[in-house]
Image (cartoon, rainbow over all chains, first blue to last red; front, side, top):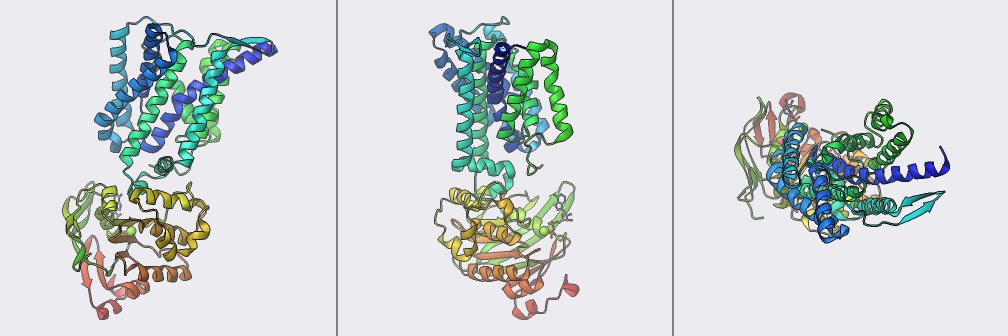
Length: 289
Length: 230
Ligand SMILES: Nc1ncnc2c1ncn2[C@@H]1O[C@H](COP(=O)(O)OP(=O)(O)O)[C@@H](O)[C@H]1O
Ligand SMILES: [Mg+2]
């Protein structure tokens, strides 16, 4: 592998990691705090992408599209959280999986009804290229990477410095004890759910120019997203970062070396991690229930 | 709070699934008194406290706090009404510092004045930056109590506070309870009979999910012996 090829692959991998991170970190927090597997997040990912597609093609503004996607997804997520999740938080993981899978399928049906089955292209908002180590790479990939870094730092600051962030960390350790201090944990649940939905929508919108938006885009990314959550360790942000980086690179190099490996290799990594650390890379020993 | 009962439990029945563990428990906790509940392991003491605090739904019965019925409220609502429950396991948030643990209680109860906490538990001052995971059992118990007295506190339910602690720390806690008793109503579950006798204004004895004795006089409390009575 030549140096330019290597540089290109690493950057492509980092951009994939960035999107995986945005999609997985909320899932990890949601499981850590609420003990739910929220498959409807992949609907918000798709809605984020479709809204970006609509606004970009109609109004010519990608960033406005991204914002529209986040707002639309959060509104939808708020409705779902208040009407469905409130009833199932106390019922165990299986309930949330089945219910949210239902929401996802209904949503995909609606997307097919509105936009049809044909994949749609989304214009890249930034068309420039940069030269790096003998290869030219689209600026947009660097923007995607930068955005994920900013989100990561923002999230860390939120969790470490703000009182609500501290309540989230406390809740991840023990929800009952958090409520025992007088904190309305359901309000914190709603907030984390909306945060997750917003991040999913952002991931979808940002991913859109790199792929094509299609009704099944959410389904296609489920396995990878959950694999990252599990490899990283449920409830751990640091773990999600590391496993996103790992899987991004593994997939990017897989594609360059031998395409079938790109699909298979992440699962091999997951098995290897489990052999060494059954709780995932940064899985907390404090996580119970 | 005025004189009379600060907290009253009426005919409480609690089951875990099919197995019933609390049978028609009725207890009255007078304002500004220290009430101690004793009984062997498995007698249902923890279950009773959890049901009072809203963490378990009683099959029937009611809980009245200073004249207000609080049965069926969510635990955080019970806390905000001034009834605090300190569990048996002595676990604080291990990834949060002592300061952060207190900040959360302040945030929930909208009381940011920690002078009271530091007056009762001066030791916490030096531990502010230490994470919960690195506190001793006694320090964790003090932090839990410190968190609990922030904001409105009418009744403090404490489940086996001295369990597993060194005698000198037990004495510190007993001293703290004596001071606290003049500010709120204390309900302690206590297996250490010496501590129970020293603190109790009244005493309930539980056995196999039932309240089997109520001692409200000094002589009765003094005469309590582990082997004979529990
Ligand atoms: N979560 C639970 N599920 C089923 N049974 C329980 C549970 N917790 C406690 N028990 C049972 O309820 C009874 C009372 O327990 P507990 O209230 O913890 O007693 P104590 O605090 O007096 O030692 C015991 O028989 C115990 O085994
Ligand atoms: Mg107990």
